[in-house]
Structure formats: structure tokens, C-alpha cells
Length: 499
Image (tube, rainbow, N blue to C red):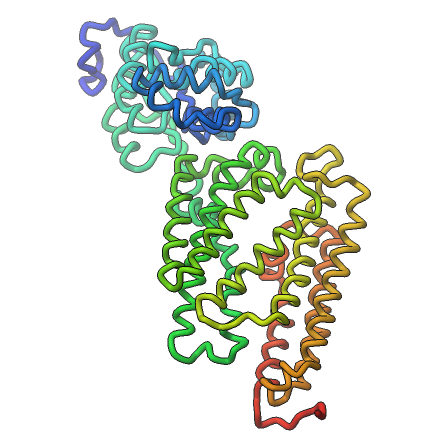
């Protein structure tokens, strides 16, 4: 051994080859977290669960027989498509250059051999593959022993990413550190020389915020609408109660987003835009999805603290959303009506939280309004989806025009309902200058028509609410509506429309 830091308690006496130029030593590459931005065991478990719903009940008996046995059983049921895994493109480019320069590359992983062999065959980079089997879990010290047997102490360079790789780095001539946290990087530097470092490109915090869709919380502002329309939002504790409902709804929705992303993992990786989502891209470990039930339970519990009926509504929302993601989104028309219902749930949640009755006028308007938005979302997706794409979700090419027709009709009907409400006794009894409310009708209709025009031109790549939040014209329309609403609420202005 040339340096004491390479010594390993189980390797004393192992033959060390003569020191060779660093670039000529074989490079051994880890798989999980290094070559791919994910854990293939968790990937395999998710894949196996889709085929075997009783898998969770089998895991403990398998684990009691050892992690190697567990991995073998999961791999046998998984049918993992290694072509869709989120590979580390920067590392692969580096490995290709090393191979072209004459360096031998080997794959050594704790993943099951069937997965490792499939990855090696797919990439065509590696001379030899070392992996776990039914009896041996090739991780940490076990991997270090095997590599020393093959190459000798300091006879190889090792590329890894985690604490489990530190024993291997102690036996290696040099380390290639890939996306490791600071503590692991310090451990690698203490163990051996660093040949190359590939820093993590996205922070876990940033990936987490993206995964729980903080930007989608804008939809949950709808919980403030009932209290705002009651003109009592600043009285008593209504604003606080609405704010708590907003947080509760946001937590539940974020938990469901995590569930959806795990369920749609394979489909997202085949999508031109969704493949950049945190789970699909590997920016966030799949185990972070375990936070989903916690978020749902905390959000539902928080709502129940305000009122049991709100907790029940949030639980129902979560159940319908899961049902939508697993089945209803593939049913033509049912998908759009379900989306409209889920939007309306936010208004109902706001009413329950603040004990403000949601009028039939508001429910009718919101039903047509949100149905129009749901059809906008679906029409936009259909226009971008290839003819053979599964993202069509049961729709066919000729259906696009029908969807547009039904959606535009829903949008116009929503504006008609708004107009009828303005001329109703309900509006006259609340608003001193209710005639000014007529100004909201063309503003709402103009905004919806603008969204349909954007959809027709292929601009609608996001949820229409998110698209609108980034649209400067939308903000002008919202500002004008706020002015109209404020003026109409003023008792000081004369009525513009007689009784």
C-alpha cells in the first residue's frame, strides 16, 4: 500500500499493483445515484407494485431473508425499463471520453444483476459488471472486498455518490465523486485523491418545492372568494379562517401531486416537458414521495380543526383526485367534469371554513367557468400530443374540435350566468351601485376568449390558471375587475340602473 489512507481492515496483505499513471487505471462506476439519478431498487419496487398490489405485504418476509433476497424478488417482478431511467448525461459523456482514450470501464452496483446487466447492455460502455445476486448484497465493504480481489488495493478508480461508497474509496487509487452532499465529499477526500468531481446541479430544497408544486397553490386562492364576496372578510376571524383553509388545501393538494408524479413516473419520462419534473428527472429521490400521506393527513387534520365538514371535504377531494389520476383521467368527458368539480371544491372549502353560504349563483357560474377551463387544459394537451400518444387519454383526433366547441360553449354560458346574476334581485340587495357590475361581464368573457385563442395557437402548455398567472393581460383584466367590484360595492355612488 502506498498510502495509509488506502488501508482497509479486511484488505491487509492484499496485493497492490505497481503504481500506474492515474488515467490508465480501470474505472469502476456505481449505478444508483451515480450513473443514474435515482435508486433502481425503489424504481423496481414501484414497477412491481403496479403489477402486484399485494407487494407491500410481501416485502417484510423477503427482507427477513436478507436485502439480497429482497432485491432479487423485487427485480423478478419489476420489469423495469432501463431505457427510461434518468441517466447522468454529464457523467456518461465523461465516461465515453475515458473509454475512447483506452481506459477500461466496469460497473459495480448493489442493484440486482438483472438490472445491472440491462443497464450495461443499454449503454454499451462497460467491460465487466459486478452486481448483487440472490445471496450477496454488493454494497459498501462487500463491494470493496470484491474490487480489491479483482484489481488489488489502489488498482482502480471508483465513481460513487454516497456514504456507502467511502469504504470503496479507501481501497481505490482515486475517486470520482458524483452529486454527493458536502459530508460525503469530505469523506471521499479523506479516503483518497479526488480525480474528478461532478457537483449536484439542483438543490434538494428547490427540487422539493417544485415537486409539491408551490406555484399551483395559486388555484387555492379560490378559498378566499366566499368570504370576499360576503364583504365580511376583514371582520372577526374570517380572514384567519380562510388563510388556514388555504394552507390546509395546499398541503392536501401537494401530497396528491407527489402521489400523481410517482404513479405517472414512466409516462412523465417519455413526455417532452414532464420529464424534467423532480421525480422523473431524478432531482428528487423517489423516497421523498413518502411525505405524500403525511401532507394529506396534516392538511385534512388542519381543516378538521376549523370544522369537521371541512376535514371531510378535504378527504373527499383527496380521494377523488387519486381516483382521477388512476382511472378517471382516461375517461373522455368524465375527466373534464371531474376537474371542474375539483376546482369547485375550493369554493366550497372556503365557505365551510368561514361559515359563509356559497350561493347557487356562485356554484352555477363556477361550474360552467371551471368546465370551460378544464376543456381548455384538455384541448391544449390534445393539440400537442402525437396521434399515437397515450397522453390522449381516450380521445381521438376528431374530438379536438368537439372539445373546443363544448369548452367555448361553457365559457359563454358562464358569462351568461354572470349577466343574469347582475340583473337579479340578489345583486341589487347587496351592491349599492350594482349596475357597474355589468362591466365584469365583458371582462370575464374577454379573458376566457383570450385563453381559447392562446390554446388554438398552441401557447397553452400549462394549466390555464398557471398560464394566466404569467400573462400580463390577465393581470390588467383582474385589476379592472377589482376596480369595478370596488366601485359597485360603494353605497356612495348613484345607481346606474333603475329598479
